[in-house]
Length: 181
Image (cartoon, rainbow, N blue to C red; front, side, top):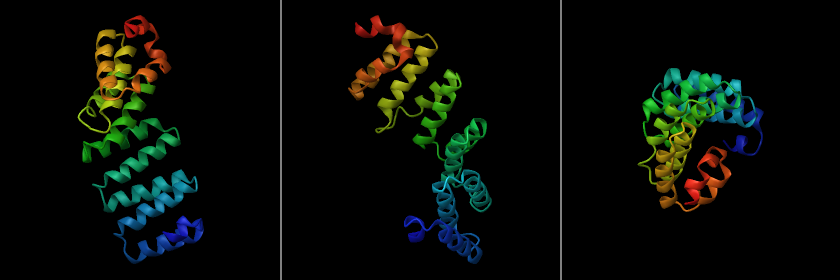
C-alpha cells in the first residue's frame, strides 16, 4: 500500500500479486490491486482483477460498484448498469450506486427507471435533497410538471441551494413561470 501511495505502482503490483499468491482469499490485496490499476488508468485490467476477486467473494458489493464505475469510464454503459444493479441487490441502501445507476438511466432517456431509483434515496439523510431534485428532473422530463414542482419544493425545503440549481437545468425551462410563482 505504501508503494502504491508513493507512486511506485509497478513494484506495488508485484507485491499485491505476491500477497495473493500466498493467500488466494486475500480480499484486501485483490481490491488494492484493482485500485492500483485504476490509478494507472488500466481500467480493463482493474475490472479483470475485480471480476476474479468476485469468484472468491461473490457478495462483495464494493467490487461490483468498482466494476460499474470503471465500465462507465470505458463507456460500457450496459455492463455498468448490470454491475450497479448487482451491487444494489447485495446492498439495497448503497445510495451512491442508486444515484449513479439513476444517472445512467436518466442520460439514456429512461426517466421512469431513473425516477424509481432516485425515489429509493429519499429516506437518506444525506442524499434526500439531491434525490428529490433528481426526481423532479425526471418528472419534468416526463412533462409531469405538477409532480416535478412538488418534488422541487421538497428538495428546496431540505436544502436551499436547489433554488439556484433549478436555474442551471434546461429541463425546467418550460416550468419557469410555475417555478417563479
